[in-house]
Amino acid sequence: MKLPNPRRMYERARWLRSDGKPNFRTVVREKEPELRSLIVPEVPVASPQTPLLRCLEKMRSQGFRAVVVVKAGEIAGLLTFHDIADYIGGGSRFKIVAERYGGNIYKALTIPSQELMSRNVVYVETGDTLGKVLELMVSQGLGLIPVLDPSRGLAGVITEGSIVRAYSGRVSRKPVSEVMTKTVVTAGEDSTIHEVLKLMVSMGVRRIPLLSKDSKLTGVVTWRGLVEIIGSHRVFELAGSGFIQDFLKLRAVEFADSDIVVVEPTTPLEVLVSKMFERNLDYAIVVEDETLRGIVTERDIMYSILAS
Amino acid sequence: MRIKVEHYMSHPVVAAHPADNLARVRNLMLRFKVGHIVIASDDKPQGMISKSDFVKLMYNRKWSYKPLTEIRAQDIMSKPVYAVLPSRSVTYAARRMLEKEIGSLVVVRDAASMSIAGITTRTDLLRAFIENYTGLFKVEEYAEKDVPTCSPEHSVFYAIEKIVMGQPVVVVDGGRVVGVVSRSDLAFLSTLFSTLKKPLRVKGISPRGVESIIKVYPAVMVSEIMDTDVVFVRPDEDLATAAQIMVRSGVDAVPVVNENEEFVGVVTKQTILKALKDSTSKK
Image 1 (cartoon, each protein chain N blue to C red):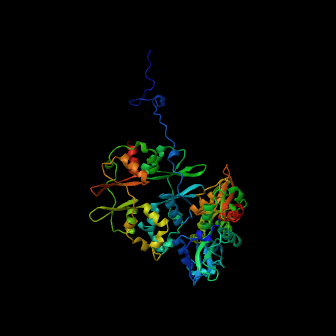
Image 2: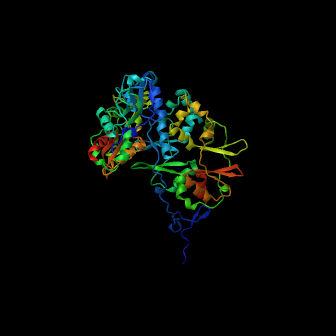
Image 3: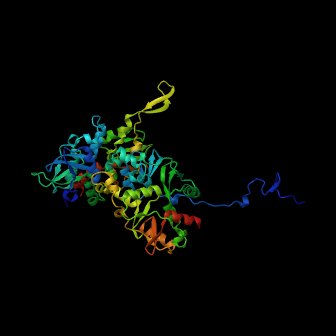
């Protein structure tokens, strides 16, 4: 005699397809790759009382846009370029410079990192899966996640860049115009550093292309250029009398990046990525007929890899 | 071949007037990225101010609450200034620095006029060591075993006390090195003392054993100021490698660890000078 299918269960008015027990025959098995290959171990690390200037020196020498603040083996905070831009002129924390330090740049740059860092950092542990990291990155809009080794302290960070580098083989041959950010935040070519910093903070970007009056690209001011000026102590020379306002009113074009990757909208993404890696840059500008069409950052490339 | 001081000195020299205030001296240090400012009047060196003088300032109860603009350079500068001729060897300069326990020598054109030609610091001599004595010395021969260490929970004043005596502090937690405190970490920490003036009111257990609101003076701990980006060397490595690390990252000390990552000693700038002093007999 044939018995009814034991896996079907009647519940109130309908038949359920399962009796609630897991059916191991149909489980999708996937092995998540380990995070180890994605972690960048050489990150600038500071203590809560480390002066801002020392943090910037470290950021400059290691070419990194954030400093992880560590206290007694735990991640106490994260000091990103946005926090610094907010403080040195771009946002509401510029009040600290103006009111507590009277605009004195020497005093302002010795502020301890713990006063500027963002606390409650989102971090993962070395045993976590790549899926969790990607979920956090996409849902919280993060570009950088510190990785904590529970037994040994900070293991490093995972960035959009390190993910793109690890999966650079999966970059598609789509034209750049399909992945680029089309609404670019730009500034005029004679805008000051203060205006550029304000734009960076209010719009949440780190790279601002400068356009001339007939909307031709004259340069790109990035976090790297600004970190370079302060980290190399050149800022003290530029702010002749020692007031930060003297530095902020300089024209931003003079500190624009000299080395830019410029591509056409029809360039395949693959070619662009290899160009970016060659010159060790994290963005590219898309230009058609000498007018700006868009910007491609590591985030755009990572999202295109995820989508495919 | 004799390696002369004139090849390993920096010039022009950053100088200040004895009547200048310390805020100006600090600004000069930051602006020109130097650690030593010569205090001179009429082109004659009168004294020297280094980062360790700023650290000493914090330790000194008389000066530490004064704003830097109220202290004049001549009040805290180290005197006298020791000078060296450009034709002397770097070995002689190293010996002189060790004898007098100082970190820099003014280079003068000739002994009669005492006009400044440049300045040679420990870091300059470290460069001389890297370029001329690579492969001659081993870390284990010179590593200093008997050095001050502290745990991350020590008060920062303990570290300052040791640094004032001329030794960088290695922070050890359970046999493992977690950080180094050097002069440049402490030199310009102005906020350290302002946080100490007011007590915090927190919930806690009072001395009588009752739960109440108690006043706590937050002492800054070593773990909050130390440099956690530590680069190690092994005992069998070349001493010039350690010197290279110090020149590149600007720390005062490189901890020496064995294969089990246990702390065995430390190489400081002083250690390199000692090796440089012994180099005449070795080469």
